[in-house]
Structure formats: C-alpha cells, structure tokens
Length: 508
Image (cartoon, rainbow, N blue to C red; front, side, top):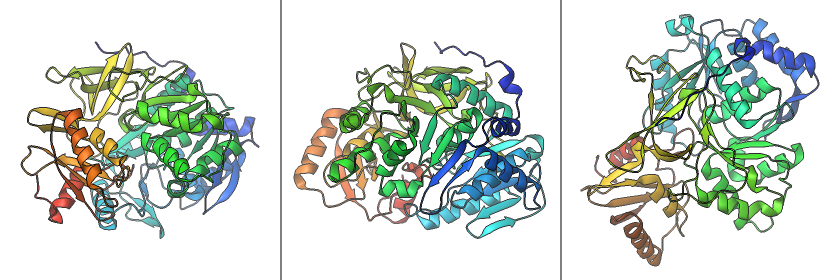
C-alpha cells in the first residue's frame, strides 16, 4: 500500500519569493544572510545588503530578461549567486552547471557542456570568462513558465533538466520546513555545490524562505581538508548540515589518519542529515563513535530521501536517538514521507525490494525540452531507485541501474563497491563493480595503491559469502579513469563506455 499524501495549505503558497526576501530584509536588515569562508572570498552579507545587490543587478542592462534561459557554469561565488537570484526574480530561467574540477575528466566535461548548450539552447551563458549573450531567441518553454532549471547529476546518462516553477518550490519548502521544524534561528553550514539539488535547496532557497543564516564553504577545499566543516560549525554555532553518506565516511577517515587534527564543539548541531545516497547504519555508527567526544548528540543524526524531480525532499526522518537496527542489512530508514507527497513500492518478481514510485504536490511535469513522457498516466513517477516500506519508514537501497544479474542472482553493485573501498589498498569512491566479459561473475575496477594478495583472497571470500557469486578479477586503473558525475558518484554507463574506448574491456 502506498503511504498517504497530505496537502500543503495556507497563505505561504501564494507568496512571491522576491517578496519573502524583502520581508526578511525589512524585519531583520542587519541579520547575516550569507557568510563565505573560502579561498576566493571571506565576508558576510546581511539580508538588507543581499536584497539591495539583487535589485541593483535587476535594474542593470546585464540582467537576463524574462523567459531567457541562463546557464551559470563558473565557480559558485557571491556574484554568481546574486546573478542567479536576480534572474529568478526577473522571471528568467537560470540553471547552475558544474564547473570543471580536478576530479573530472576534462574532455568528458567539455563534451557534456557543449551537448547541453546544443540541446537546451540558452540565451545567456556565464562561465569563467564572464557573461556571454549567445542569441536573442527565447525558449518557448521558458516563456510559458517561470522558475529555475535543475539538472540531474548524470550518473546514468546525459544530464536531464527539471523545470521548477515557483509554486512547486514554495510547496516543497513549506513541507520540508515543517518536517525539519526549522526556524529563523537555525544556522546552516554547507560545503555542497549549488549545481546539485541538495545544495541548491538546503543552502540557498530553504534558508532564504525561513530567514535563516548560511555559512558557505568551498566543496573542493572541503574535500582536501574536511575539518573546516567542523571549524565553521563551532564558530557559527551551526544547527543544520546536509551531506551524502560518503562525506560522513570522509570525515571519519580524515580524523583517523590525522592524530593532530583539532577538535571542535559540535553540540550546537541539532541535525546532521544524510541524503543523496543510501543511508548506512555502519556509517552513522562510525561517525558517532568518532565524534561523540566533540559533543555530537545521537539524536542529531538524521536521514532524508530526495531528488530534483520533486524539487528536493520526499521523506525525512525524526529519530529520537541513534537507530542502528535494520532488517535490510546495512540500510537505515530514510524517514516518513513529508507533507504533500505519496510513495508506493512496485514489486519486482518476488524480491524484498521494489521500485520506488512517487507523486506529490511538487512533482515535476516532465523533463525540460524532452518530448517523451516521464510520468505514468496515473501521475506516478518511477524514481529508478529500489527500496521498501516498513512501519511507515522508507528504506532506499540504491539505483535500479546498480543491479547486476549474475547467474540469476541480483547484486546491488554499490554495496560491493562500498565494502571494497574500505579495504587496504583501495580508495573509497574510486571502486567500480560490474560483470565480467562473460557475465558469469563480477569484476572490480579501482584507482588505488597496490593490493596485497591476502587482501584479494579475503575479498573474494567475502563476495562469495555475502552475495553467492564469484569475484573473477580485480583491475587496477590509473587515477582519473573512472568517470564521476557532478554529484561525485560513479557514472556507470559513461565509465563502461570509457573503459571500452580505452580497450580495458570489451563493450557490454
């Protein structure tokens, strides 16, 4: 049975986002809206100053006009964020795109950016070289709708555009804020990039809607020195922080390998929220064990299930303590559905897990500039994820694309990859599991150091015991071979294509 849908009501839905920001600027003009602590910029911006800068840009001739599609693919900073919001308020349709990072293949990134320009035909492009007006024509879809464009992370194919209209944005923010019990006193600390829906909604739109403060960190700087997150939380008395599962693991590993790393007070945090990836019991257990001495409370560890197609959140947990028990191996529940949303599980054969389908007040209508329908005739959207519902809680196992069928057995690839990435000689997030050439066993590709023979022997034993299939081969790759999406996940189809192109393995 699907979980029931409830409906958001009230005057919040009729508000204009520009007027919401103006109200905050009038009521709390000197309150910090944003602070930046990056190598590029270190400063604070009040609500009054933010509104003034946005409105000044809206009056300038450089501001995108109504219905123009705007691509912003430069490094995220205050200037680009002001441009983005000015575009939204002026009824243009902006989109953040990921700039090239050191962990992405430059050729693949350039090809994707060119493909996106050709497919979506933006009027304005802002990149590292500055603002460029490509042409004067306007996309007909943008003329019919105002809002902004979110892009999927592109783990399985070319990024897809999701047009978020203002009414759906406000419906999501109201429901999510209610689930989080958010107040203007909350302070969000975030290293998440704004071209991903988790960063865009939780650190840009959500805090502006409720009048909160946000401390922005740089994602690349955080990846090399993750303790900057804890430092900023302690300095700002941060209360909310969203991260994917790998980030919790990254922090644990950093402190385990750096005995001199400084401790910071985390007692102000009321919610560390794991999102974007399957939420693992082992990760929360390790995170709490590592940082309980920092003042971390067990009830601060929470989970969420979200995607761009529903603006952001679908479910949100409200754990009162650290929950470590699960009937689904290492999976933690991702909470109950938030207001205005409904989910159902569609069985696959007689497996315990099924396809997660969703419909909601803020579900998208279909992918931007893509004629093929994304929704079923009954309004349900197949998320492409596998999961289960138990006691009103949603468990998310991962993408259906992760499922590998070996001799009739269904294996979820990322579960193998997570375990392998934790073993000596391997690197977390740099492991890719797929079928061998004959499709009769598994092959693991990894970017890492030398792997001991004893490790390989134990690894093959673990795979055989845990999944009932054979690990045929472990292949070491040069750094940068595996293709990552803009959200940091392994892009499976693109990685297989690249391995085939490099003749590391035949095309499947």
